[in-house]
Amino acid sequence: MKEKLIATTKGAMVSVLPIAAVICVLSVTVAPIPVGTLAIFLFGTLLLILGMGLFILGVDMFLVRLGEDIGATMLSSRKTVLIAISSFVMGLVITVAEPALQVQARLVPGIPDAVLIFTVSAGVGLFLLVGVFRTLLRVPLSTLLIISYTIIMIVSFFVPENFVAIAFDSGGVTTGPVTVPFIMAMGLGLTSVRSDKDAKQDSFGLVALGSIGPIMAVMILGLLYKPDSVIPEMEIIPEIIMSRDVLLEFYKEIPTSIYDVVMAMWPILAALLIFQLITRRYQKGQMLRILIGFVYTFIGLSLFFEGVNVGYIPVGQYIGNYITTSSYRWLLIPLGAIIGYFIVASEPAIHVLKKQIEEISDGGVPANVVMRYLSIGTAIALAISMLRALTGISLYWFLIPGYIAAILLSLRAPKIFTGIAFDSGGVITGPMISTFLLPFSMGVCLDPAKIATDAFGMVAMIAMTPLITLQIMGLVYKKRLSEAKHIDFTKDEFVEYD
Image (cartoon, rainbow, N blue to C red; front, side):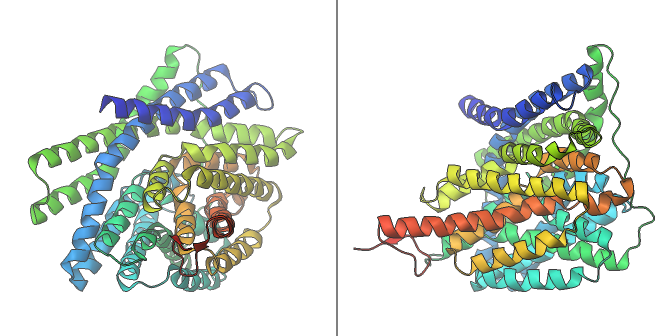
């Protein structure tokens, strides 16, 4: 166990240090940060690394195991009503437990946190149900994606402009460090009892469909709900005079961080206990290991959110605002691309995706190459988001052609790459995106009244670009393998022939 913890912590360090280094360079060049604020950021980075290491270890012992077993048990029951109810309830519960959603709810102006959280969670629950039955009925993922995004685009023209960007952003932040491991493991569990050739490929896609539900749900909320205000409160940079003031800032946040994680994790713990009472699936030793994994996950998330809430949100907003009001504000576009390229690796859930890709493809799809394409896509997305925040260009000019391109690519790319691509769009938009990049984008917007339209939408852009870049990777990969190894991709299978 000690060796695994050291390994996960080293992996977290490799993931987080590049983005921390970029911010440190900015702090001594184009965006000088007060020394006390920089100290808060650095201490927050330390907590983030420790938290991510514990989280990754705990997820493998707790959430992944529970998700796989619930998925396999649901499918084995063969009871349609039970499967439907279980899918919706688990989608609802697991999303309420998503800390990244809690972060977004605090940042979204004019909508009570509870209203937005329940709306988004209901959307995930409904589309998780759709995803489960897609797996059971073996409906092509591309078919559901075409239908769903066509409906979304049509409905969006009737929704108030302030809600459009928030709706698309909601589809990204719901799939974070709690939701993704559970849903992806649930997909593996659902397909583990199938022996057909498409079973492995169909394990992907649940996260993609789970990301669609919140978009539709928030758009419907936009048709019914009329907020009183759309101007968010800006974060206040804490004043640091003495070195101990750094620790005091984190100390003051401890109750909030623990409360947020308790509210996030208790529904999952309750699901575990209910599942065990009904099925008696785990022996005492297995149950003890799972509970230890729960403790690791709890401590890891607490440290992670303590770090990002205190150390990253204020710094992100400060840097964005400082550069925007300077004479070299044009640097925001290339700077956004650089930050976007490195920040992907610091998302906790991305490591879960990498592991599943390697397992499902038996090493046939290199996870490191997938990461490179994800980083490129995020870099492009954040550069475009900075351009939007500076100029006010409508989100539609990018989302509509982007999703059309993604859907067209899904008709040609191998199924496994389509599933990975659409799942990745949700996976990379986790707490680091919500707690650093969204405040960064809000700081770029000088007019607070336009934050809802110009700053929000960044998460949507980041969630969209992997749909294109990874499916392009799939087409390239398909061409190279078919030429080099004579692989038959006519049925979207990795099958060699002479």
